[in-house]
Amino acid sequence: MPTPQVSKSHFKAHALELMREVEASGQSLIVTERGQPKLEVRPYREDARSPLDILRGTVKHYDRPTDPVADDDWESA
Image (tube, rainbow, N blue to C red; front, side, top):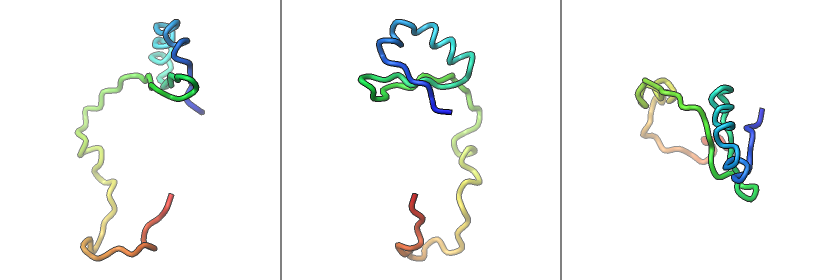
């Protein structure tokens, strides 16, 4: 589901109502200016884990990390 978007002028006029919706739904809101995204309003989520704990286990294991890497070894997005 795409993130809802509102114009900056609409957000200014309805800020409290929109912030209550974000809080209640838990879904972010993008504020645009002339059709371009400028701000993201999202619910605050406290994450008690440290950044290193969050990243733990996300790196692959490499047997020989100092070996050179060829161009064809990389995956492109």
